[in-house]
Image 1 (tube, rainbow, N blue to C red):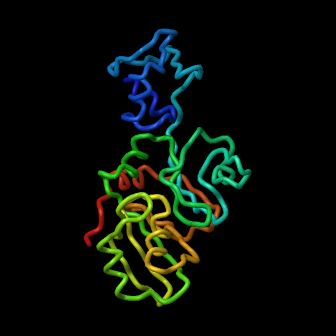
Image 2 (cartoon, helix red, strand yellow; image 1 turned 180 degrees about the vertical axis):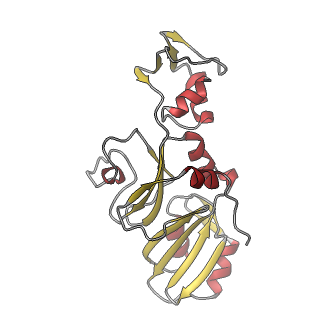
Image 3 (cartoon, rainbow, N blue to C red; image 1 turned 90 degrees about the vertical axis):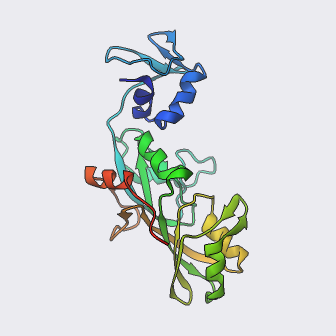
Amino acid sequence: MRLNRFLASAGLGSRRGVEELITAGQVRINGHLVTDLATKVGPEDTVKVGARIVRQQQSLTAVLAKPRGYVCTADDECQRRTIFELLPPGWPRVHHVGRLDMDSEGLLIVTNDGDLSLALTHPRYKIDKEYEVLIDKPFNQKDREKLLRGFHIMGGRAKAERVEILAPKHLRLTLNQGIKRQIRLMLYELGYEVERLVRTRIGTLKIAAMRPGEWRILTGKEIAALRQSEPLAP
């Protein structure tokens, strides 16, 4: 197995991401520094990244219905509840794909598949993410075009791919960007406060009837469909 694939399967990131560890001289095989990306790893080899021995992990990808009040981090310095408290303690090491802020809820993918994580988060893939949003006052129809056209917020130029008005204070927004707190900041710029925000879909995957805090392992068919997700037509 090529070294980059081995490191990705150990939960250290995407194959492209772990190549930076290799070229930076942080990887040793059987005590020897390795910087050649074409290096192969055998079953008897000992691989270290820095001072840590790494081993190939069982591939695991799951979906979690994140409740409000949990943060997307493994170790929070403020002692807040984290999403990893909701997962079984015996699992291989996994990381979250993208994030939801503490006050947001809904669909969150956790995985140790670095290539899948890259495919779902890199800007060039433009994977659709759908959210239902409750706001503090009736939505002005004129603001719909502003969201679709886009404008600058903290973090860059932001736009929505689709805006549906489900009720005067209830919106469904589709994004394929990943700017931090994007929906909250966009709506704030237009004069609205978000009272509830729930992510309901990532690519082909929907949250369906999962209760807050529930998780389930994704099937091979679901993972394959996620890899092949394409943006919705505008």
